[in-house]
Image (cartoon, rainbow, N blue to C red; front, side):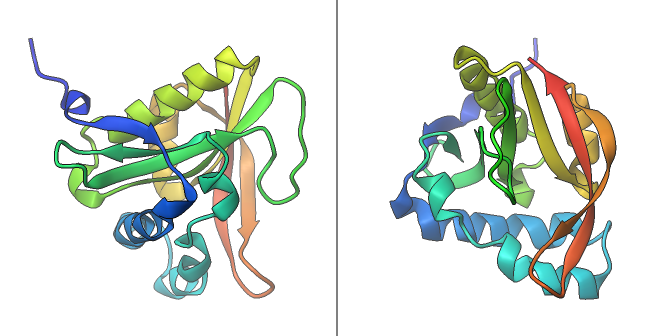
Length: 172
């Protein structure tokens, strides 16, 4: 029997005091993991907005930090009922939000553990479907978690910048 690397992490709800930790984790994660899938100029335009920790998520109680044995943040992610961008709430539907895994911890179960935590808690609160706006580099990960592609989308990051992505959904 193999050892599950995800057992080496713990997951706790994030809070507003974690803003700098989350921002640093997103900065460490997004640039190198997205680089093979996007043009450098496009990334340079969107990364400042993408790597900013969202205060509403940090205060939501449904956004989490994955910590290694020493307490170092190695992953983050959460869910909300409100759709990113417009805040629309549809009964039975929730949205995964702002996931990131430190590059040293990719493919070690961190994202899977965060996704499972979100799905279990959302289902316990009556959510029947999860959606995610997946960056192109994350599409394979979400597919492995049971998400299917609904359609390609373009995510706006201010008036001048956007990124192609994919809207994906999973039944709970």
